[in-house]
Image (cartoon, rainbow, N blue to C red; front, top):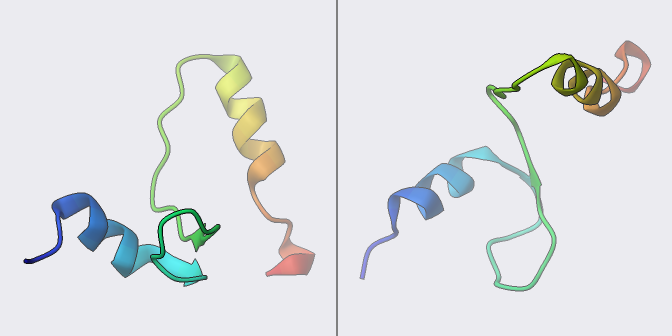
Length: 53
C-alpha cells in the first residue's frame, strides 16, 4: 500500500532519523503560521543562528 500525503511530506522533509513509529526525527520546515506577537518571538527562538548553519 502507498504512503499517505502526510507520510510523503514527512519523507521529503526529513533531515535526520527515519520514519519508524515512536522514534524522533528532525524535519526541514518550509513555512510556519503564527497568530500574534508571541508567535513571532517563538519563531525567533526556534530559528537556528547563523553560526550553526
